[in-house]
Structure formats: C-alpha cells, structure tokens
Image 1 (tube, rainbow, N blue to C red):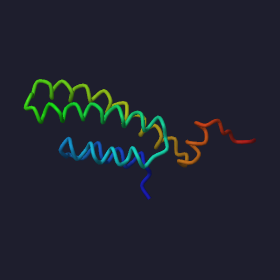
Image 2: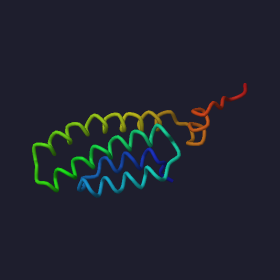
Image 3: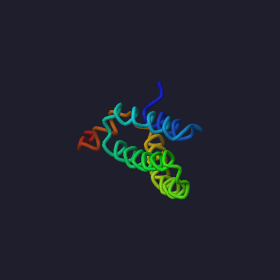
Length: 105
C-alpha cells in the first residue's frame, strides 16, 4: 500500500494540466489527517489556483510569476514528504508523536 506521502510525491511528478494537478492534490488534502501536510498542500494548491485564474484570462506574465512562486511551495512539500518517508515510522506513529505521544522505555 502506498502511503499519503508517496501519493503526494507521485502527483507532484506527473506532467499534467494545472487543473488536474490541483484536483488530485485537493483529493489528497481531504484524505489525510496530518495538519502539516495539509497546510503544505493547501499552500501549493492556492498558488496553482491563482495560476489557473491567469491562464483562463490569458495573462502569461502572471502565470509565469505564480509558477515560479509555486516552486517554493513545491520544494517545501517535497522535502517534507521525503523527510517523513525516510523516517521509516508508520503513519500512525508520526501522527501520534505530533500529538504528544512518546514511547515508554
């Protein structure tokens, strides 16, 4: 089974239209309970939504601006997902630790 972090990375690496990428990431946003991941997806999707608006208005200079801006959000999102994947902890443990749970020795 592919975890949510791998799914996000797969979506980011697909070569699709802005609208398709936005919709797929939005679905992943609603399928997770991880607040940090949700915030990062939301930030990236907000910039994509702005780019989509300017695409529809045929304003390429604004689209370029938002695509450059989206790279900052994308880099943060990819780095976070890669960090969670490399931690090799189960998803439930990552969530529990973020909510104050600690292993008893």
